[in-house]
View 1 (cartoon, one colour):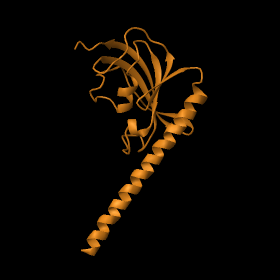
View 2 (cartoon, rainbow, N blue to C red):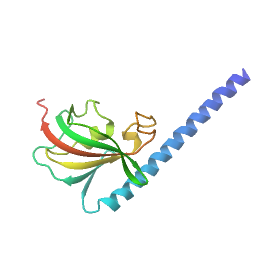
View 3 (cartoon, one colour):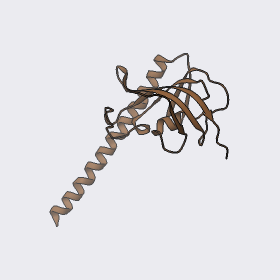
View 4 (tube, one colour):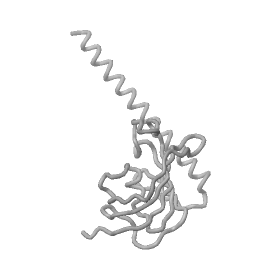
Amino acid sequence: MVKRLFLIVSIAVLAVSCESEYQTTLVDQENFIDKYIASQFADNTVIRNEGVNRVIIKEGSGPTIEKGDQVSFYYVGYVLTAQGPSMIFTADETTVTIGEGDLIKGLDIGLVGARKGEESCLIFTADYGYGKNSVNIVPETSALFFQTVVKYVQKNKN
């Protein structure tokens, strides 16, 4: 009984320690992202939406993207490291409905407010990407950087 109790307490302490370490990593990533944006995009408009940074490279036109809208866009994804973005994947044109969970949280949130033709960079912590998971060639707990170009926006008719 004592051994079992010791094992349960040990597992609980380890879980709390790992979560605390993850939270510290997220705070460090947020600070790094803020400094990175200030040094690389000082002349650009930066929109912060629910923890996601959208750096506008080229303004778009027309109605803004809202949850429920169908959006077609191109993207190139990077892991954001201390040396800067490191390319990990590219994509052809992708069409999704915003807010339905078809994208990682950072893209879903980051595209809200963009317009057709907008070119932007979406930059966010691991919490808005893959979290503590390693996915394909993306290492666990990675901050991510996406270059996006919105091709069209179809407004939700509801």
